[in-house]
Amino acid sequence: MKITLTQFQTLDGVVQAPGGPEEDTSDGFAHGGWSVPYADDDFGRFVAEVFGRVDAFLLGRRTYEIFAGYWPRMTDPADPVASRLNALPKYVASRTLTTADWEGTRVIGRDDLVADVTALKARPGRELQVHGSAGLARGLLAHDLVDTVHLLTFPVALGSGKRLFAGGGLPTAFRLTGTRTTSEGVVIASYDREGRPVYGSY
Image (tube, rainbow, N blue to C red; front, side, top):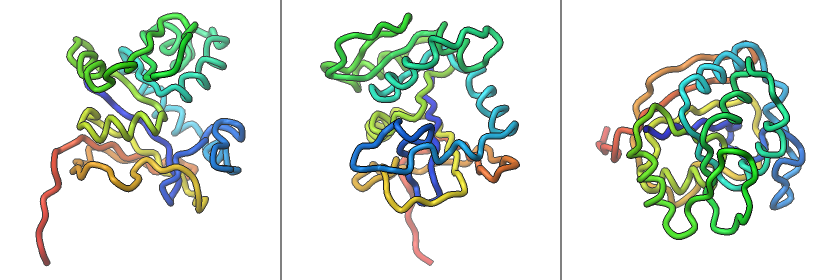
């Protein structure tokens, strides 16, 4: 399976708490829910396309707990998100999580996250999808484990908050494989990992 990462970000690169005010208030973050006003049919179609390619999910602890508190109650079999999240395998990366009651969930990464994820990638299938989970995503990017990034950039800047591409990341080149813009101005860009950057001089 290849690992795909779908990440929401602001114009200034903030990825913290896109879905609600209480999603992640760490470090005094008071801007949660910033992506909500920009949801539209174009956004919904993209999300449905992404979830139509998934065979398993890989989530960080915080994202897993947010999802597990909501999606198991959504039982419409026609819902492209709920139907996949509730039916397919879910792997949550955590050294501290003691229970994972959502059906189909397995905790990984207690001893060696890189080895566990590498083993998952070696399994047959289409996509092992990471949604949000910025801390986990940074770790996966640092070990060249992410194959495709879907970066959704929303037309808002917040000035503070956690960022996906923070200092100390691994220099990586990507190739743009697709782009579209929603009616509400969200720019959706898809990138495949190419390897190390190539440098030059003008």
